[in-house]
Length: 270
Image 1 (cartoon, rainbow, N blue to C red):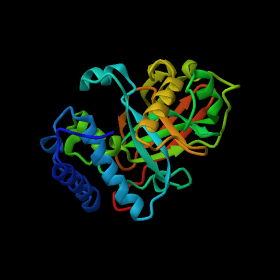
Image 2: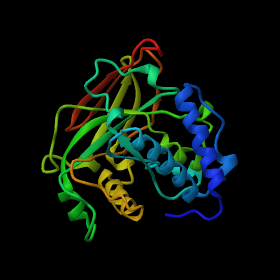
Image 3: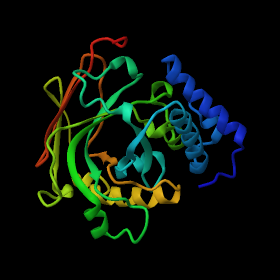
């Protein structure tokens, strides 16, 4: 995808601003003053530049995340489609005893279904049957979203440029194939420190999390970076996200898939 209304200098400035937020550990002003509020191509150009820098520094891509799957959130931002970000290996904190709060600026948690692919989705028709067959297994997941933009003051282009407000993620151990459940029929309940804070269902994610996966497979192809076997896809929130400051314990149960938990370290410098 190319951009036409924003010059390369503005894209570079936006990328530099967001990179500084991450490097210095402090949120920055939105980047829409540089790339506008509606130029998706420019926003993805910023995201690609930031991700290029990460890859050049040795980071390894392990999948994608899908955002803006809720119709309510789409209406809020004035869009009619999801967005996506890139997942890197160092974003997976599933094996750590605690989520390192020091790596985050303004974290929030949301419960999702994660799909792990058994085959590439690089060529051929992307029919519902093909999408389903491409899934090796699914697990319950927590996406820890974060924003480098101060106070989450984001427009569509701000969040897309900021790698779709990606942070970290946690995957549960229990795996289930699609022979064992229907993603659209799942229900979700999420607790923060044993208080129920979010509820939802698979139908809240574009009608079916597999619809979200199909959208991503098509879009990733358009960007020349199709989905590959072994990659993880965080398919989108099943309910509202909640703040997750240091010391918070998040527990989410997704029917059929079971529970996934995350304990955030007490200190930001952990």
